Length: 243
Image (cartoon, rainbow, N blue to C red; front, side, top):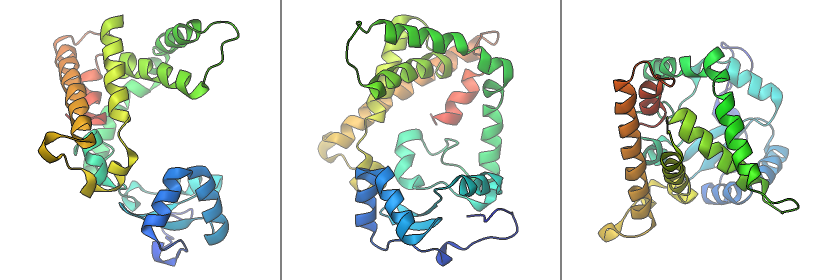
């Protein structure tokens, strides 16, 4: 990682960190916040971690985060790209680096700037009111579940361009099913097998195919309607989620 300037670099080999890949991976998966705090206390910040899907350097301070964002993107590479590829696709901006990554990022800029972002306000407000409005006075709820449902609706409408309650609900369910993939699959490509077309990985693939097909339909719709309010959808969808 970068120490704060683009010229003075710290080699990952100079950083301390745990040596066991399996133990580190499972500790982080079980309790990320507690694990990172303990590891930083033991090995310093930043620290180098060995996981079953690759090595990575982690920072745990505002100063470290500032140094990362101030550094050239050329100093970094996607982490666990091989294992994460089935989730978002090999050509997703999350999987690319260098010139290809820069080119795809440019496609993402217009929908996330100025008036375009402000136009999402009504979508976010409506989704929040719908979800919270379904709760009864005094009813107990899990904040994470409520926030997730709001987020899924905003993603379906503002990012994927879903219109109408039925299409929005179908898109929300499709996204939710894909995101339910067991994290182990994203750490170990060797587990990404579906013997005889059965098992949890086969089920994940089915859900992904369903979502990809929905995205293809929306991409074609947006290409055919250049004056649409979300006319950038046909550019951003393949960039975020490679189809």
